[in-house]
Length: 257
Image (cartoon, rainbow, N blue to C red; front, top):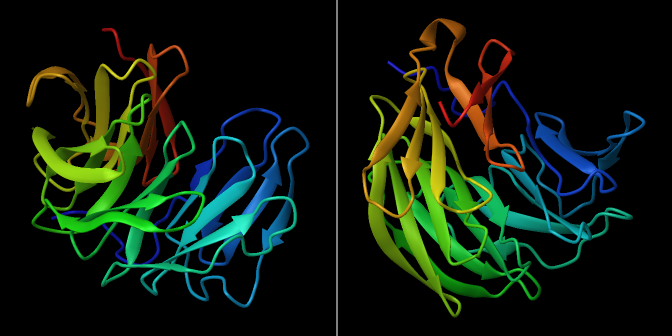
């Protein structure tokens, strides 16, 4: 059995691109913007904002916009400097959205949710470019772009990690990257795009070859005694992997060993 709290995840989602950009977090009480250097925060709220728990938040590469998702099947885009809506809500999914991510070139926004589908959006206009496309058999918990913005990886309750190809604004299902013994909660590309890291309810962190389907390079686990793994990320040089657990701990691993 997994450890998933379906509505309120114990660890908030956070995202920032640069040290001089704001930090964004989301939880039961909505979205907060933080000054990472001074540990001060402010709420981002508006009549168009999600009214319940916010499941995912992402900041655009230039730091000007924030995308947030809640229980009501929509993505909300805000201006980071004043919290005002940047676009009308983005609607295409048929169930709650669990993850959003900007491409590193700033052109695209990806989303995945309980409808088992991935959508690709124009990050500037909010236009739906492709999707909803179904490639999983259960809820999608995490989506992440490759550094070149040409691929998306998605992690699912169905225990799989899948690759999607982005080609001039169109999205197509790709190869199976890998699997876990239980639900996969988080997935991310390495900075050079050659590796994918995944974290799961099975307590394992796995590093995959992004260019060779189902090729497992290394595994860290099992760490189940520390709880389910909610979030994983590479360091900027790609050498280290950070992981967040249900019990509130963060662990760092050398991805090269």
